[in-house]
Amino acid sequence: MVFSLLCASTVPNGFSAFSVVFLGDTPPHRCLIPDSVNLSAEWRNACIPVEQVDGQVRRSSCRRYRLDVVRNLSAVHQRPGVDVNVQEIEQEDCLDGWEYSQEKYQSTIVTEFDLVCSNQWKEPLTSTVYFLGVLFGSFISGQLSDRFGRKPILFVTMAVQTVFTFIQVFSPSWEVFCIIFFIVGLGQISNYVAAFVLGTEILIKNVRVLYSSLGVCIFFAFGYMMLPLIAFFIRDWRMLLIALSVPGLLYIPLWWFIPESPRWLLSQGRVQEAEAILRKAARMNKVTPPDVIFTLTEGEEKKTNKEDNHNVLDLLRTSNIRYITIILFLVWGTVSMGYFALSLNTSHLHGNPYLNCFISAAIEIPAYTVTWAFLQFLPRRVCAPVSMILGGGVLFFIQLVPPSLPIVSIALEMAGKFGMAIATALMFAYTGELYPTVLRNTAVGSCTMVSRVGSAIAPYFIHLSIFYKYLPYIVLGALTVSAALLSLLLPESFGLPMPESIGQMQNIKW
Image (cartoon, rainbow, N blue to C red):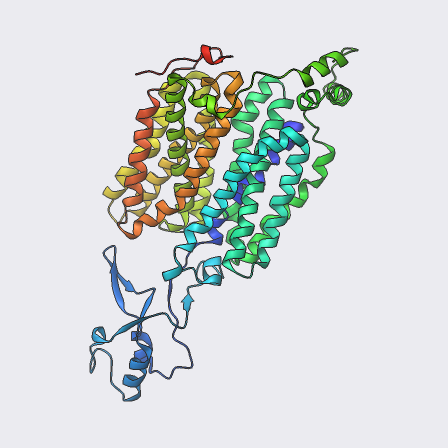
């Protein structure tokens, strides 16, 4: 039961992490021509210049012909294209705002706060602010759970994520929305980390492996899959936020079913509480516990005995561990960048954005299943680079697909997402196997923080398409394939006992 409840607690993280795909999408738009301006039907239709973008002719999104000139020409009954060459008329910005297509959305934060044209830079920054909150949450979540306990931090951060998602509904400006979004990101990752740590500490070995490699990942993907389904029926960004915040209330009763980590309680010298939890678990599993599980002396030893002082600087202490750390930082940052860039790009693909997002989410379930099989049967120096080459290599072929076959481009991008998802999940296990016990948590935590830097940069990769349509795929493909080649230098850890000290670490492969 605890396994299922902890897995279920990660579902809201799935739709929270990618909600900006629909909250912050930019629908087709053009300069607003106020109804109060007296123009003929011909001139009203001709007010927006025509421009060529990626080989396609379309109406400009950010410019219009000078309205005072057009009004005067309309007043004297001059006809556009007949009496007047409209291309010779001076252009101006959208001084009266924009009108947005409502074919896909009733409203988004882009339409609400006009994050287009000169303010277009704010749209990717919105996602970046969220991921900076995730970065900050990654930094403090472990320390908070070590200080106050796994269970309290799990539920407090779930409350933070739920409450502040709801508060976003009342954002009066883009700046306020971003500040609150930062806090939502902080709560999202803190909740996920607390659930992950609590599960790994409270579950038995076989179940623990299943939980860490498949359980939380697949339930995260379920939440991700729910996002486009909810967004399809709720096209207004404020109502969508309300819908995404409501499920958090369903987790309140879990407080009485999810126990605190006995390991953490024991480390705090709270032996009786730890023993009570284990006895309750034994009764539920119909197992007879021993009369004495822990002694008070043992609890005190756990509390007072401290490991040797190790910190993040130890990740750079010797040349061997320094090279391993640098390579892992580069690999983690690149893979995270690719994973989030492809995930956030679903609304920009050809076809239905809701279907594209659902496919992108659903493909993670077989990806995590393949990850579990890789971890069971394949050397790490084989499966890690192969998954990265799959994720990045297929992106190079998208530029070769004819425009008449958009479904092939989408299939290639989904194949890239499949490889990125495998690589992301693999790196958690691979990193933990490479570092010794005294540095394992520090190493994984540091790599996770670096990966959040990659995810914060990811939104800007999508916007490289304004320079060249396929530039995001070329850059991401090159970076990911380079990361795959770098990973070949890492030591092999498959089938080997995990090192306990720095001296037992495997050497880098030159």
